[in-house]
Amino acid sequence: MVLLVLGLILFLGSHLIPTFPAAREGLITRFGLNGYKGVVTLPAFAGMILIVFGASALRGSPADAQLWTPPHWTKHLTFVLMFVSFVLLAAANFPSKIRDAVKHPMVAAIAVWALAHLLANGDLLSLLLFGSFLVYAVYDRLSVTARGVALKAPATGLGGDIKALVAGGILWAVTLFWLHAWAGAPLL
Image 1 (cartoon, helix red, strand yellow):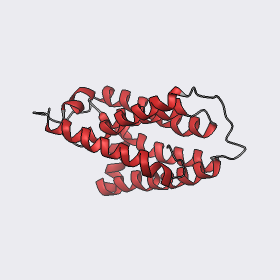
Image 2 (cartoon, one colour; image 1 turned 30 degrees about the vertical axis):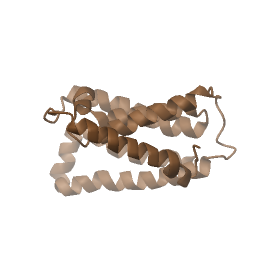
Image 3 (tube, one colour; image 1 turned 60 degrees about the vertical axis):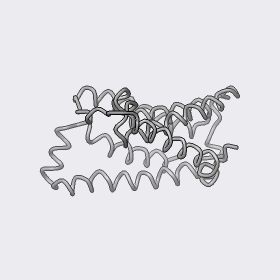
Image 4 (spheres, one colour; image 1 turned 120 degrees about the vertical axis):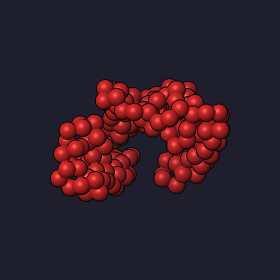
């Protein structure tokens, strides 16, 4: 559990730096833009590795207590929410009406992903992992709004929406039928 918590602190902590503009600018001044990117990227990468190893060690161990038993229907809802999450993730990369409506689709994708997994799982591992990401996503969304982060130019036409739906659908299907099982947690 220690590896998981340390990984979450490193990964999410490094992602919180941009939410503090003075700290971000201080790091850029001290290390330059590329150095700042390293200061953010290296702990995030180390955190991701620790999250993977920590979650693998905790999954199924006696320490991974079952805190509640989710109703069976939440698993079906999770499949739908994950489709939405993947479409939002894709929409962050294309000028689209979806991106324009959601404003910050990457952050929304993380929130939906985390919520979907919290609904379908009632163990300590899920609470720590997905709960942390959900809190981060809510905080980041509020921070982005408070900082007045500029949005990209509005989309014209529906091409970006079609791309987001197709790309999100492909990512969803690959994850559902292959990637999740490859990661040790088969869904079907």
